[in-house]
Image (cartoon, rainbow, N blue to C red; front, side, top):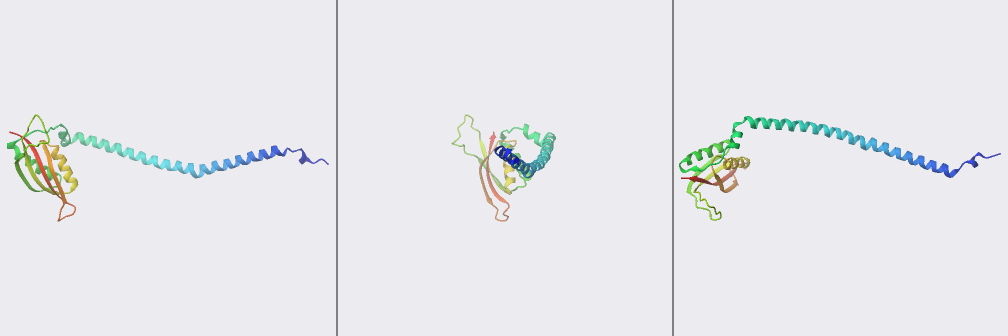
Length: 190
């Protein structure tokens, strides 16, 4: 009797089995990668994209509100076009009134204001134009961020005002407040 197993080329069959096994393992790896990694990444990407779309819409709405409020608010547009000017010596009470108004807008209490007369010319700055200046000593009480807004508004106000000295310390009565000592230098024309 003739054995049918003798006619089979065993080397070729083993090679086909190895290729089939490698293909099966590759298919399992691709399935596992898709099921556990790629699909979860796709779901996370969809969730992040929806958040980004919501945030970009909110940013667009906020920026349009800012543009519309800046165009309507006369105080904002007035600050952009105003220029600082020299204060006449006789207008010093007007400056003190402006300082009082700015401090009220920024929730600061003025404890004491002392005009100290003409300031000595500074030796470290040399310029062709010598402007007379008046020193004003201010004692304020308020929160730190309100103080920063006050100083910014004061220096960008209608008169040439320079902060010469600034001292801050925590208030003894309320730890959230600061006691502020400012020495202002105001340039004047006679």
